[in-house]
Amino acid sequence: WPDGTRIAGQDLVIGGVPATQLAARFGTPCQVLDERTVRTRARAFRAALPGAEVVFAGKSLPCPEVYRWMAQEGLSLDVSSAGELALARAAGFPATRIIMHGNVKTAEDLKAALEHGVSRIVVDSLDEITQLGALATRGQEVMIRVTPGVDAHTHAKIATGVEDQKFGFSLASGAALEAILRVVEQPSLTLVGLHCHIGSQVKHVASYEQAVRRMAGLIASCGTRIDQLDLGGGFCAPYLKGDTDFDLAGFAHRVQGALNYECALHRVPPPRLLVEPGRAIVANAGVTLYRVCAVKESTRTFVAVDGGMSDNPRPALYGAKYAVRLVGRGGKAKPVTVVGRHCEAGDVLAENVLLPGDVHAGDLLAIPATGAYHHALASNYNQVCRPPVIAVSEGVARPIVRRETEEDLLRRYV
Ligand code: LLP
Image (tube, rainbow, N blue to C red; front, side, top):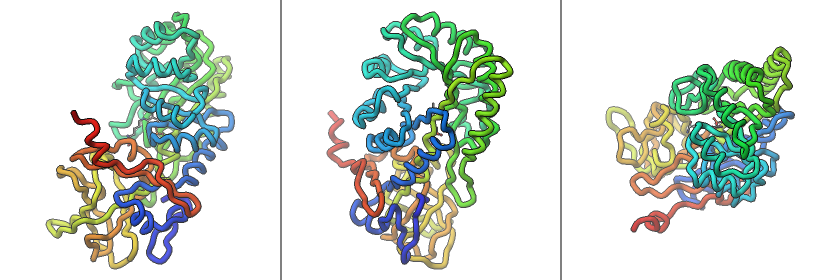
């Protein structure tokens, strides 16, 4: 739950605003985002890593207003397409603090990045190095994405550090070294750093420690000065009771220590660290409100709501688990399965969760930890309009993404 969330009567108060009021005013489903929690977590990264550049992973919650908060908190921004860059521009995000990522950047993506003057582009293939080399004119700063061969012990679909992988240049095979040489050969490009991202929802500091050791070895052996080492994001967020927060202090201590040690050993100056948190900043700031539309007693109790996999495909994609709370009243609990409105049997939001036994149509449900990769992954499946994102702060609620309408939907059809 967002910081400071409390129960008042049986209502749930988020950012000082009762959930029943939010649902009545903005409708359901509705994604609520607590601004203070977002800012506090952004600050926590900067405080834990004072020497590092903290880069918000814009893909986790693409929204100009959220990007503005990040700019104000002194973070940089990572964008992975011309579209995310357009949002950053709309937010007035300083180009000197924008980094562009992606294993595929189309000519349009690269041109947009160059035109806007983004500070660094992280290259991910030899084709891209050639293409960018031809398009760039003024010594565009570049980082190279490396696959360090680290198993981050996370879901296979979000594990990006292992060798068998579409992302990055393999360290073990020598591809990373070759990419370094290729960038150095391009007169229009300036190599400033190396990058790796071992995965998402990573729980163990040890995985990063292993990555930093390998990357330091590459920096020492590549024969070129490397000023920046970007360790990507992936820091886990708690979803269920009992899940713990990422050990940020342990990360800062052990990763910076390992980097300093390896660099001293190899007699190279330690590069400046960068980190790219997304989920760890926004996940726990978000709560989604749904209205119960039907309850069906069958092999089990199905509680069907007015949203589903179009606003949260994460259970279907990654087997992600969520907690659910009934807002407005209590009662003797029984296990139920909360399902969505979409035409798929796999459209399940939460299995085997406890809700009051008399849960019925019209009830309001709240699902926490929905700030990261929810608005970002939302779709129009079944031509259901995407929900709004409502920012709450000190008792004030305001939409920062408005609800999609049928007009929005129809606009694209010819
Ligand atoms: N940097 C790079 C290069 C990335 O690819 C990502 C995420 C991040 C940083 C931020 O990772 P985070 O700190 O948020 O874990 N849709 C999936 C997550 C995909 C992550 C993609 N890349 C999910 O819902 O779990």
